[in-house]
Image (tube, rainbow, N blue to C red):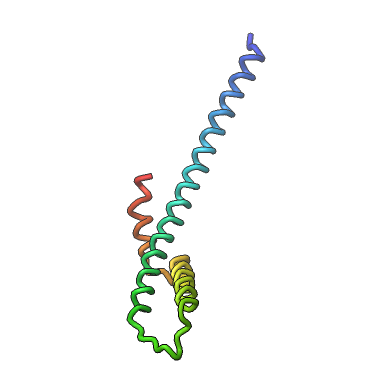
Length: 107
């Protein structure tokens, strides 16, 4: 004769295993998204340095210089431009995608 308690315990164990599998899938998806974001952030840092280097080559006269305030604003503006460029595949240089492709199998 089949014991209802055994059936309930088996069903509970089966549901627990499915829940673990699903939570693992979500974790993998979260890790994947985190890796994509980290790769984009890395590309943004590279682009920010690139923009800083370009800006350092521009001659500025004292009459038209905004002083320290302009330097701070330019730094923040370069950072935002770099983030914006790296954030979409259409504008990205492709570093983020390459980094992601190389690292995705290692997490």
